[in-house]
Length: 115
Image (cartoon, rainbow, N blue to C red):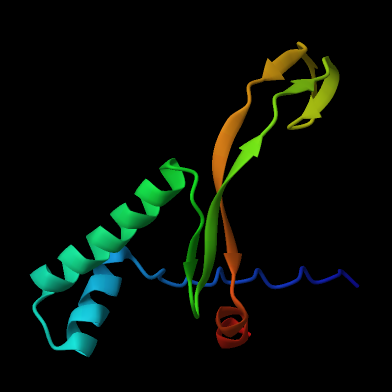
């Protein structure tokens, strides 16, 4: 008897993410204001977070979490041979420069809401 091949899985549709436009629409509806006013508020909140992190100040939003700017030290990548996509590739040693990256730590209420 010939073995049957397993049925091919149907690819599930990716869930739509919440975009900035969707957030603005929801904020306008909840507050009972125009989309333009809600967009101004959302943009100013984002700009405020950017400005604070650029000044290396932490941002704490109760119920959401905290943002901070973290300094990552420079590091060296060792050269050698690596398996990339099934082929051996020679990689040169290089140095990745130091940089500052944003970090987010969710608050307790946010964790419970997602759970």
